[in-house]
Length: 162
Image (cartoon, rainbow, N blue to C red; front, side, top):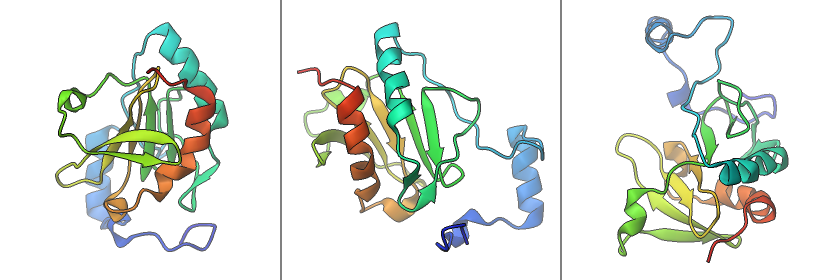
């Protein structure tokens, strides 16, 4: 259970031997159990929007507390020990060129949906001066509620590019 009393999905728990193998493969030490992700390398203009976004992001998303992944960066954020990960300043996804690509609106922010095999969905903002990517766990495959929780922050800090 989390500190908010919410039960964590069983998929987050590994057998002790599997956990040791995962930590060894990822190069993690027991003193820093945070998830590690690739930090984007955006233009200076996009980085400025991302830094502003970082300061406005919510403390909780979908009932999960903020726990940013490593390495520390204003371009990344996480909730629920890496269950939900946000990266700002990512490159434009190639799938955006496909006119048949699936998109959704969550409280005034447009997102491109990419279903990932053996993982939860990945969403990337569209029509913004910096691309914001959010990956969600499988349990949110048909639930955009977490995206709505990012909408106010994105609208406030990352201008539209029409």
